[in-house]
Image (cartoon, rainbow, N blue to C red; front, side, top):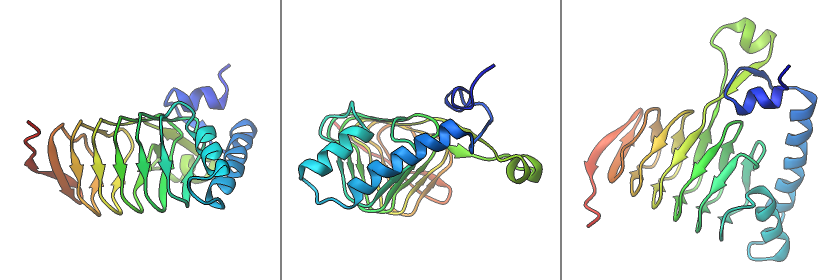
Length: 186
């Protein structure tokens, strides 16, 4: 029988209040508390970032920052998240190199059943991974919904709600976000 964590990571419905998952979220909160109460460019701040996103090179997280687990965030080099970013990482969030998140960006891999029984009575949740390519800039207050891929070199306008994949080399904005124009990156 699969654990709730195995189901979560496989993108299957799982029970979010499973004891193992709850314990992992609490451990993440301890690291986030350390991060969010630290001053950037201090040893304590760097240690917290390296604990949350261990394989990134030079990730810079402006406190406050929030996430579910941290362990499901994979970021390339020079990842920057400005103030108040939230990444709900019940599924993998794959972030490329040189990605910039403006303040209040929200990245959500989590979803819930539409029916009351599954959502409320049973506490079922599921997650769908998100991929953000290299050299992407996401404007302030943008929301990235579950399952979305944003292509390399693209820009997401402030306040946008990204519900569908965005190709490479474009500016996309709106609610829901749509391609506004192409970007010539030559």
